[in-house]
Length: 133
Image 1 (cartoon, rainbow, N blue to C red):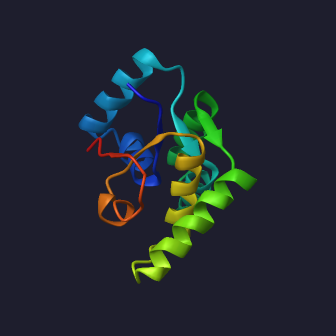
Image 2: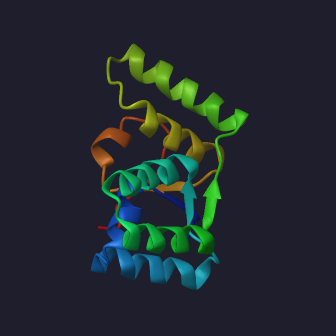
């Protein structure tokens, strides 16, 4: 099994105890100590929970954050993201900047991106994808 970066939607499914996602998390954690997620996903979930004033879910998310590995945006990940942007724009197949940044973090760390949003991410050359749903 290769290390992964989980996308925002997968974290949300896990926090809602979606059975397939929970099962994949458990299997992954048998081999690896922590789940990798991006600082972008941290922002997306944190901002949504704060907007909804969902204190119970926020506490569960912050517990998840403390037990796992949040990967930052780096100069290297930005280089990957800029290449992704340029390639997709040339083909008129742009996706959201947030998704481009997440893909750049996955590629720069040589991680498989786990997402349920494969339609957008499959446009990115060289990005390995899995869907745990």
